[in-house]
Image 1 (cartoon, one colour):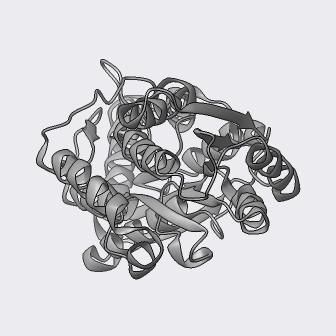
Image 2 (image 1 turned 180 degrees about the horizontal axis):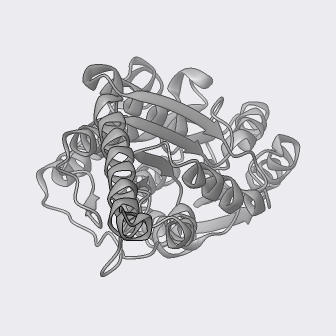
Length: 346
């Protein structure tokens, strides 16, 4: 007589194990068979945001070459919603890597990773910390601000606009750690390097889109003696350009080639090569050589930050004597003869 209970005792666990192993095998094969999947989270909107456009372009260039898939998600201007949206992306469990760019994104990503520890993140424009489980790439904003500050100093010191007042301006969309700890001090260090008597007029809009308010602030700054303004205000930058054109003054562009926006008004431009960083880091992620917690800091010498001095509009509208002085500073920075600490904020 066959004892069914005894058979069940040994047979049922065996059957369950078979199902479990088969299920795991199918999931493993499914993950191995599908292409590497990437989500690009834009903390804002893509259109009109040069650094985010470069990030997205760089990710897609790397993905195309490696046969990976990319989905771009815009987070909108309400920063309070970013954490929820990033966590929702991680919860999907379908992305091998989530890429984003913003100084606030490292902490948001760390919080999302607490709930979904298998999710990998790459944050451009963010700095790592000890034992971090997200990968970061940090651009030396102090160096870029220093370069732009030197140029602003040369412009106002030469009285290029005919004014006798030595004052430069800086307009920010909002105050944030990189602005207060790196950009503003670096900018001031730059123009003081030219003339210690130059003053700074610093104003904050309160958001990244109000071009009308930006125009009003810039107009007041120009009226009070500033002849050139560095604007870091996202979509509101156009208001500064408009005010400068009306006042016959000048604008400094921060993170992409801005000369063509208003030739003769935008007379100096920096660049942050997020596309280059995105391509290199995403390639490593796809190849499996990007270790969790990788933290890279790079600046002018490494080729990720620079002052654009080969644009035809720069050469046309900026006097030769200023370009020659600026050329010396740029070459020293590129050669590594002038180095500024990158900072550890983020």
